[in-house]
Amino acid sequence: MLTSASLSARELRDLVCWPNFLFLNFIVMTSGPQITKRQPQFRLLTREDITPMRRLREVMLTNSPECFHASVADEAALSDAQWASRIGPDEDAFIVGAFLDGELMGTVGAFRNHARKTAHKVTFWGVYMDPDLRGSGAAETMLTMAIEQTRKLDGIQRITLTLTGSNTRALRLYERLGFQVYGEEPDALLINGTLYAEKLMSLDLGVALDG
Image 1 (cartoon, rainbow, N blue to C red):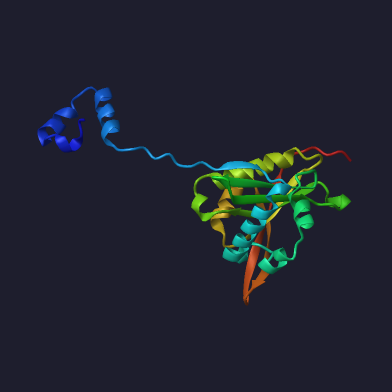
Image 2 (cartoon, rainbow, N blue to C red):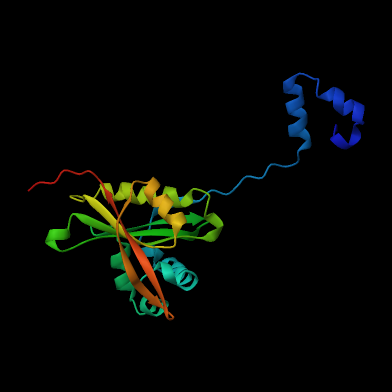
């Protein structure tokens, strides 16, 4: 088998003068095995996913407490029935999950406001992506799926969410997807004596409503 190690410097120089397709074949042949990067899968969670959702929720609240309103203790107190109502999926709630090799790695939760005057809005919550998948485009794909799922809900005109003020990477992602900052709440969270501000963001879905 021809390899770069078996060629002299002159032979390698002459090799570059070969027709391009022969040179490219040489590179492929000598570059070693190609590594295929694993790709995450995305789908709506169902009530069969309560256990992995509980597990991932504990991870995100432990590792990034400043990014979420709930605490580990708060979530531990929730029953399976309460989790089932959060997961849906139905007209009131759903969660989009990102899976890698069958393991839940990221989530976007959504719930409809129930009061009549605010029933045209959905709130996104629990937005999280495992560090191993950050920067891969998985979070954007997951959020895009959540936005499209929200568009399927009857009468929804706007999506709202909150974001820790210092999370500039997430801010850029939301803005790329069309969200806009409409305000900021100072001292929104108090965690172990430290105060955190939150940005308030909103996405107009452009749905015409009656009345």
